[in-house]
Length: 129
Image 1 (tube, one colour):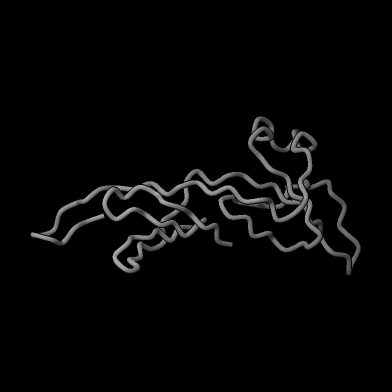
Image 2 (tube, one colour; image 1 turned 30 degrees about the vertical axis):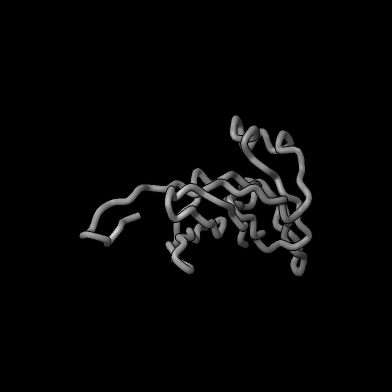
């Protein structure tokens, strides 16, 4: 953040707060995918969704498991699996800095976070997604 009072000066830096949200679909044991994930199985959340559409899971990057070249093609007209392997984003991306009634807010890839105007400390976060 920068201040424009008495010239332009850096006022401080902030790091977005992590937001924990419930998974949008039921979860499975990631160990079932250990052959594909290896050591990443310990940091992966496996979602079993009803829909084949990629889920909206704030703070996570989700993708379908790679089934390999040996996987037989699915019959025509059947929906694809709703299984997704999701890993936590390293850090939320700050999309915008907003000022509402003199108070700074961070709009990130995971949340809308209010900051104390004097200290820039987080005063709360609302998950988005």
